[in-house]
Image (cartoon, rainbow, N blue to C red; front, side, top):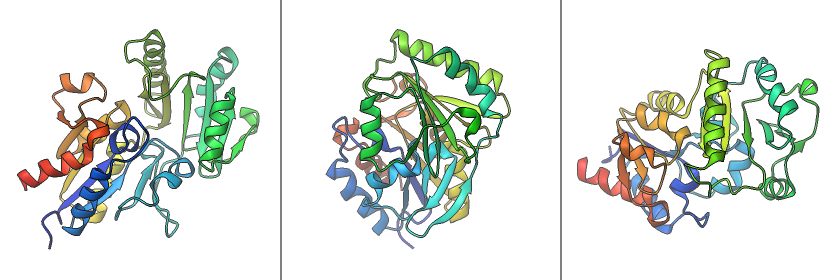
Length: 279
């Protein structure tokens, strides 16, 4: 039994495990190797689809199943094992159709294991998806037959990871998220993964629900979670030890969530150092 044998550490990927330069600081990699060597379990919980995430995370230290689609899917990609899967009810189409009809200025992606169905995306996003090995489809909403795990709506042309939390765009997307939660209560859950993005998935799952279920499945008594944005809040609140980068969502400090080092300075390494002081 190692020092961290009772612990599962789950980190968000973008702007938590990575810095603003989109790279994973070496301090995080070194700390994770040590965490695993001392018996700790580690994995990533990301809003990215599995197809979009895998090229980015496959070479990182990890010894627990990967959580993708904001908790809608948990799997071990190296073996093909599915641990948990929570596809959206087919009624998501009725929820989404008015946006597609009334807001052609917004980009939409339906994300599943086969790829992304894309609507109104710009060339920059198309190139980004292609660079990550994501298969894209362009079909009318009513003709989509594939199982969808979540859908994303965002402002095209904006930097998804550079938007101001207090901008007019951010206020619009917060209102849109609230509207989806009201319309889809009990069936769907909407979160603002970034200030200028809303993502919707089955209400049966979230990063928090799936992370806690994974900890139970692995027999880990304690869940440690770290994330920077609203889609991470559920797992931070579900965790026994929750942290956020000090340069993450500014509302997290007001919630009393423990602040770790900024993402570019090794947030996860700092979290592990703090756990050493407590365990």
